[in-house]
Length: 324
Image (cartoon, rainbow, N blue to C red):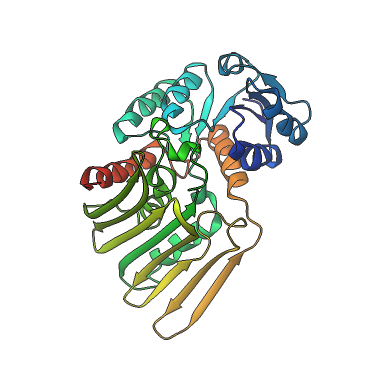
């Protein structure tokens, strides 16, 4: 690999245009060199971000380009496993949007392919690359809130007026849990290092065979977990880790600088409040730089496929436990 990691993007999604193409373009020692889309109008904004970017009219043609070393995949959820496999089989490192699969056992083939090829295949779980989450994990490990007793999470937005959105389509792997449940569940696993023992309650409100509102509670070793995710509520996000001596609250845990400024509030029983703010960190850019660093140096990737499988397993448990 050269010092500069050369990227291609499969599909001209809005998320790739707004967040990931700029992140790749601005990340140190990374370069966005190609985009695959059959629609010329969708390519134009990417050409404005990266002048000279090469446009392919098919995913297969991009994967055949020997100049591309890594591929970012922002395709609809049901296409993630297939195109992650095809990209790795073409010799490319793979960063695929979450959820990387729709059931946990589908990730096994990707783990085997990663180990067989020596390529990095990872889910784009960007929040763990943000320093607010590393700080929150350190606070918990240091015993800043005593014994952890309860974790509460909420992540919601309202797309009821956009019935054509792929998140409202069961054929594309839509639903609030696949889209944003990965964050409340995955962040809890990341901070605590623990896995759920059982799902205590799973109440899913379904529309058109996708969950548009989900309240899931779970038992972990020593603490309980409660999460609300919804595609039918006003925008809101928050994560709180509560112990017997205080709590840690993240006020913009998932979309910092978009939803609000990232800040971590530590409040103890003595009413001491310590707030740490992160006004300028970009977790998408950090993710790209960490991805390259793992390839170049062999450093551990913050969330390998085994981590992604654990989060997907928890979502599977929630779906299996629901009567919805």
